[in-house]
Amino acid sequence: MSPYLNPLHKVLILTPDSVASTFCQRLITYYLNHHKHTTLNWHELINHFSENYIVLLSSLSASQQSIVARLSQYRLSGINLPHNNFLKGCDIFFKKKIVPRRCSFETALSLSMRVYFNHPLNVYSEEAFKEVFYTTKPSDIPIEIFDSQLRHLERHYVWVDSKFTDLIYVSHEDLIFDTDNTLNNIFGYVSDDLNLTELNKNMFLYYRGLADKSEDFKKYEEYRDSSKNKFPLSPFSLSAKKFTLSEKISKVKNFNELYDYYSSKTSNHLEVVSKSDLNKRITQEDKFFGLS
Figure 1 (spheres, rainbow, N blue to C red):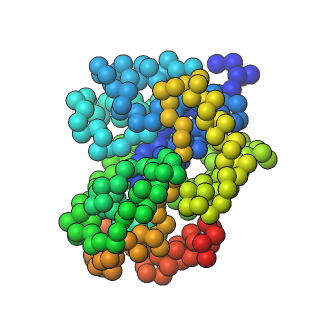
Figure 2 (cartoon, rainbow, N blue to C red):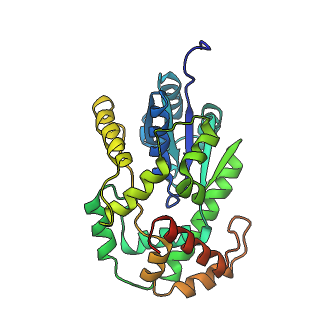
């Protein structure tokens, strides 16, 4: 490749779901396109599987655009392919392997709510947000559901650590509360006219009817609409945050029971979480979004 050409970015998001990974993936796509790197969001990498993993990896290698894709262990279970060879190929091809990481207790809580309440994985509009938010009535989450999501998380992090190298772990707090600096630290591009942190905050408030669309939001919509015309098969709409941690606690009646159950578990992949940690997270989140 000529040294005068923009380098192609090859980015893989490794996710168990419910860690803002879709939001992360689409923001990275926007960020790279803004910085003049034509970038396609392949969304779920395994959705592009057709004949065999060699064909898929060949398609990736032939791309003339930068690529942002995502991969989850549980989505591989229904695909008949030599997983180890495919994952080795992905580990070599993708130069940035990003692992969004949030408090394991809150992640398991979010996953359990999605299963129990039958929520969609993501919502992409004001109407979809309101349908989920206002129809979710306070309920008890069965321990069996919560336990299955904890085991799902453990399997995910064991899989990530054992199958991939040179991982970039990104905390949920940095991704949400300091988006611009987080992406700048990973990719190295700085722009005075791009404010992803404020875009996220305004989206949150707009969907709750607490703010009008900001200029950052309108600018993103212009990018989304023009990109859809160029790449109609690539997803661009940003996902909206369904619940803050304080809102989750209000929706889960047996929150203390689930917390006690989590605290009784011993695992190298499930960190210790105190009630003080959760209270600090609630305070930080509510302050960031202007709810307190």
